[in-house]
Amino acid sequence: MDFGDRLAATVRSVGSTTCVGLDPHLDRLPGGHPTSRSEAAASARAFCLGVIDAVAGVVAAVKPQMAFFEALGSDGVAALEEVCAYAKRSGLIVVLDGKRGDIGSTAEAYAHAMLDDDGPLAADAATLSPYLGAESLSPFGLRCHRGKGLFVLVRTSNPGSGAWQAPEPRGMAHDVASWIARQNGGCSEWGPVGAVVGATLGPEVSAWREAMPKAWFLVPGFGAQGADEEDVRRHQGADGMGALIVSARGVLFPPEGRDGDDWPEQVAMRARRFARTFALRAT
Amino acid sequence: MDFGDRLAATVRSVGSTTCVGLDPHLDRLPGGHPTSRSEAAASARAFCLGVIDAVAGVVAAVKPQMAFFEALGSDGVAALEEVCAYAKRSGLIVVLDGKRGDIGSTAEAYAHAMLDDDGPLAADAATLSPYLGAESLSPFGLRCHRGKGLFVLVRTSNPGSGAWQAPEPRGMAHDVASWIARQNGGCSEWGPVGAVVGATLGPEVSAWREAMPKAWFLVPGFGAQGADEEDVRRHQGADGMGALIVSARGVLFPPEGRDGDDWPEQVAMRARRFARTFALRAT
Image 1 (cartoon, chains in turn brown, orange):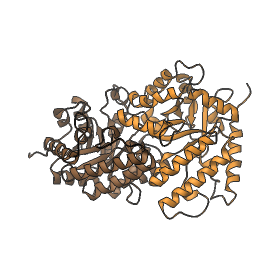
Image 2 (tube, rainbow over the protein chains, first blue to last red):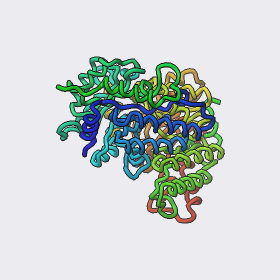
Image 3 (cartoon, each protein chain N blue to C red):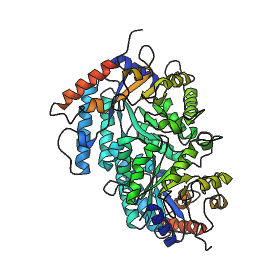
Image 4 (cartoon, rainbow over the protein chains, first blue to last red):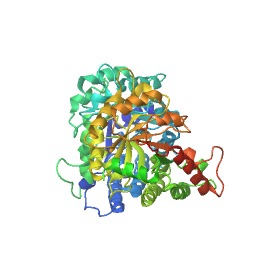
C-alpha cells in the first residue's frame, strides 16, 4: 500500500492525527544522570521503548529525532535501531527525523540507511532537507514505490525561517512545494510525498495547502514552540485529515521537572489528552 | 587557534590545498564482498585507516562522508568514530560531511555529536545545510569560539542545484553567503565559517568569492563530477589559498575496477598526484 494511504488508514484506525516525537533529552529522562555515553544510550533506549508502549494504539505515529541518538555515538545509533524496530512492531508509523539531503550515491546511502527494509533503521518515512535541489530528493522518491514516505521541509516553525525560505515574491519553499505537488499528482487521495509545514505560520498555511492538495503535512510547533490548537486546525481538512500533528516535550515530559516512577502512566495520560485534542471529526 | 587560521597553517605545512573524501563505497573496496553489516563496517574501517596512512602529510584534510557509514548501522558509526580519531592523530584536518541542519536543542545535539571534543566524533569542522535559516547555524557557530569550523552549503556542484539555490534575481544562496561574510567579519585572514561552492559553477564563482572574501571554500566536483583543474582555480587566490579542493573517488579508486593488494601504494600515488595539481604557488 502507498505510504499516504497507509498513514491515512492508521490515522483512521486510532481516530487521531497525532505523532509523538521521540526526543530523549538526557537531562529530563526519569531516573539518574548517566555517566557515560553507553549508559546514556541505555537510558534513552529504555525511555523510548516505554514511551512506545504508552502511546501505541493511542497516536498514529512516532518521530524519532536522529540527532539525540547520534549525540550518544554508536551506542545511541544502536538504541535508535531498536527503537525504530520496536515502534513498527507496535503498529506505529515511524517517521525518522533526520532532515538529510545530499546527491548521487550519498543520497542513495542515506535513503538505504533510513528507509530500506534490509537497512539498519527501516523506517516508514523520513524527513528531508531540499537545499541541494530536486535531484537530491529523487533517490528517496524511488522508495515511495516500495510503500515508503517522505516529508520534505517546506516551511518550518522556527521564528526566523521565513526570511530565507519564503521571501517575497517567491522563495525556495515555492519550488519545493511545486515539486511535491507534482510527485503526488497521480494519487487519488493522499500521496507518498508529504511536507513539513510548521504550526506557527498563521494564515499563510492555506496557500501551502492549496499548492499541495494531496500532501500529508507534518506539523511541528504545537505546544512547546508556541502554536495552539487553532493554529494547527489550519493544516487539516474539515474532518481533521491531512496533517500529522507532532508533540514531543508536551507528551514526554511534565511542564516542570521530571516524572517519578509512574512515568509510563504519566506519558500515557498526556498522550491520550494530545490524541483527543486532534481526534478525527465526523463531517 | 581559530579554525580558518589552523586550516591555513596545515595547508602551508603540506604545501597543498587538498582534501580527500572518505567515501567507502562497498562495491569498490579492495578485497571480497562483505556478507553482513558488521563485516562491511570492518572493511570500511580498514580501508579508511589505510587511506589515512597513505595521505597523511600529503594532503591537508580528509572529509568522511557520514552517509556511507550510517548505511552500515551502528557498526558503521563505530567505524566512523575510529576513522575520525585516527585521522586527527595523523595530523589531518577532519571535515565531517553530514550536511545537517535543524533548530534549537536538536541543532545543539548535532553540533555536540559532530564537533565537541567530548562527543563521539570530535571533528575539526562540519558541513551544514542552511534551509532552516540563520538560527539553525548558530548552535554550530558557538563551536567556532573553541577552534572548530563550519562549511555551509551555498552553491553545490550538482547540475540541477541552481534553479532552487540561486534563481534570478536573488535566491537563498545569497542570504547564506551574506550570513557567512558577517560571521567572518572580524577576522584578519581566513574566518572559521566556510562555504561549500561547487567546482562546476564556472565564472559565477568570482561573485561568491567577492561576497565572502574571508571564507574558506570547500570545493567538491573535481574529477568524477566533471570539473577540471581550470574550473577549480577560480576558487583560489593567486597563491592557491582559500579553497580546499576535494577528491574522493579520484584518489580512493582506480578509474576502472578495483586495486589489488598494492592498494595502499596506489592510493598514495594518486594522492600525491592530486596534491601536486593543487600545490601552493609562490606569488
